Length: 490
Image 1 (cartoon, helix red, strand yellow):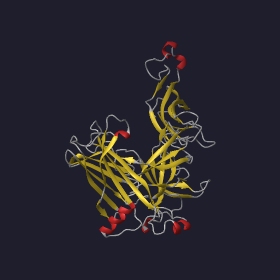
Image 2: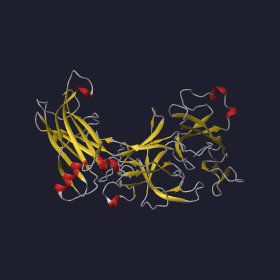
Image 3: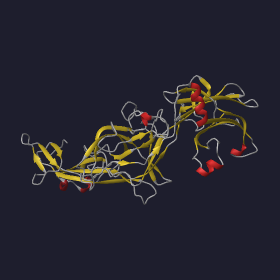
């Protein structure tokens, strides 16, 4: 800092910042504005340039002239916050006069219209400094991890968000709409957050192999389904963390459930004393606060691809990007296993005033896969059923009881790809009267399409006595569960 040493007695650093306080006893976290005196250092009357250095070691002088240029002085100072948290601090340096006692008191009164003016000093412009965290964050306390159903409702034409039940318009099909149910995980976190200061993230940890020296995120196919190649545990990678381009610096748009930053090769402690460490890639997600539950949470978008019902186990850590090198991540924590539902796409298109075509597409798990189309369709019909209903609203009845089914179809298989385990079901539903021909959307048309998908399993075998006396020769008992449901208003 340049100064006039002949008239400047001392330099005082004044600081202001905002602390993030997350007290579990409060209903929510809050911001607490703070300010304070950072340091004061004495100047030399021959000084023209002040250079600030970290606090000196024991026995070293706090102010010292340069050996080659006595007008340059080194001031060894520090601002002690009393903890190790990261902060963004705004500093102003105040230069005080050597000749205060010679000024008439009337001249030493500050101008109230000028900020920071005390009448006896000059204040510098504000300087913003990022003070890094100097200790590892505390390990996160994971409350729970649950499957997340992500529905696509953004207009790709750039018209902004649309209503929840309007879906996404189909290019080339002006009177069609598409709903997508995508997969993900929601991680709930116990309070408090911000153990390392503002900007603290939750990192999902990935590696190159499950045999990594420490915990990383991994998943595996449910062994009841036929897919020998994916029964083993596999490390979660870039392609499974859906659309990681923002975190990689290739996309400037931040989207929900996507990482906002990524760092490769960061170290994590394996022992409490930090003597043993390992490296992982950290995908940073910004936590949100759920006031109703009093918990923080992070949504993680995952793309299971052709896998259906895989088990996913995420490894996570607190992540403070603004830290001293090597101290960015806390100790790792493994979440509970989460089974991911299969992804589905539903397209409803109007073909005329009375008809609506329904197509459902997505990966399908199977115990036995065959490349023979006829056999595959037969097996799918046994283990799975997709039903579409065209319903009309009775204005005299409220709620779901007021919807009357006009047409129903058990959708047949229209196409399948054994390599990707992807199947498309489709059929056309017909109304008993004309329906306004328009792009399906919420409104007062009084018509809707409801789609349900059910998985069917052989039930538990009967006890031997019942098998011999009651159920001899009968086919097995089948149980079923709903795995997908959606509705589209016409």
